[in-house]
Amino acid sequence: MSSSFRRILRCIAITLLLAFLLPFLTFATKPKMLLFSIAPEWHGKTVCDNGNGYDPSVIVAPSMSYSGDSVNEPSYNYRWEQKDGASWVTVSTGEGVTFVPAFNPAVIYNTDTKSKKVAWRVIVTDVSNNFQIVASDEYSLTLLPTIKAVSSVSGPKGNKQKYAIELTVTGGSEAKSFLWSTFDTDGKRSLLEEKGEVLEGVSAGKYQVEITDKVCAPFIYKINTDKNQTEKSQ
Image 1 (spheres, rainbow, N blue to C red):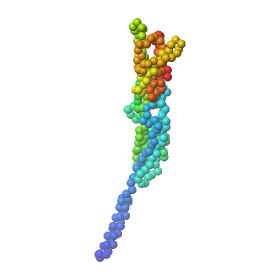
Image 2: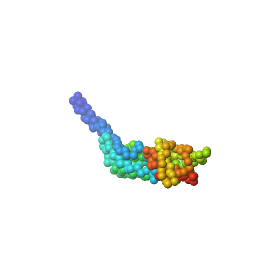
Image 3: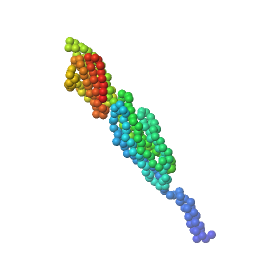
């Protein structure tokens, strides 16, 4: 066999080998799904359940994009989840959709005496592109319970028949202010200097305290020491 013929056979063998290996040498990357979402206006804020719950605004629909090659027509399965405590709970789902819709959270309530954190997120699976799974950021808020108060009246004490009124306050934020006032027999209101939860050394009569913070609605509480009656309003 001549050397020229061997060179021809070698070239043919190399050509066939390259033709076989070419599909494996194509450096195409698998598509990678990316999720983009916009935080709602209440995210990271502290809000209040003033007795009727809090109604969060809509979380806008997330958008998906892809990096890489050979992206198939997307087909999404999704689930919106809510965490109101220790674990996530599915609150809305969809399958085989071409886009993930916006989500409108239900009204949330806080009937406890302490604040609680509530969060939402969406998890998306693209069944057409390698069953990739992505999750959005968690969007959360802190929900305070409405301000409430109860009182205890002690007295009368001493020759001057003085009373003391002590409040026990729950709900709202930690920083609160107290505006005390009293009413004469004609119903005229007069402000008092006391700014705390205890009003001491006062005569029998009608008193009112307005409790406020920077988040919840003011809470107005009325006490009548003569009849040992209380009345609350907001």
